[in-house]
Amino acid sequence: MNDKVKEGAKPPKRFFYTVRELAGMLRVSASCIYVRLESREWPSKRVGKRLLIPAKFVEEYISEA
Image 1 (spheres, rainbow, N blue to C red):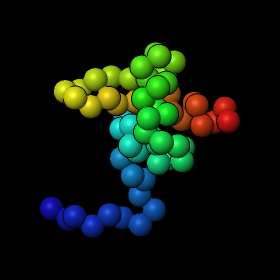
Image 2 (image 1 turned 45 degrees about the vertical axis):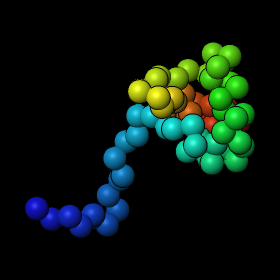
Image 3 (image 1 turned 180 degrees about the vertical axis):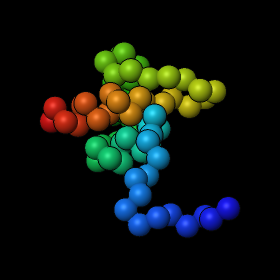
């Protein structure tokens, strides 16, 4: 199987972001993200010990800014 990515190919669609990834994207601390998640202001899914934020929500949130 060819492991090379074709030029111009789109990366696979993301379904979730971790707290750390989202904090980096928004340039805020992870604790800031946790406050919003714990207050249920932002949606999240728990998988094991990790909280994941839906990519659809993140895209909508960023486009509103």
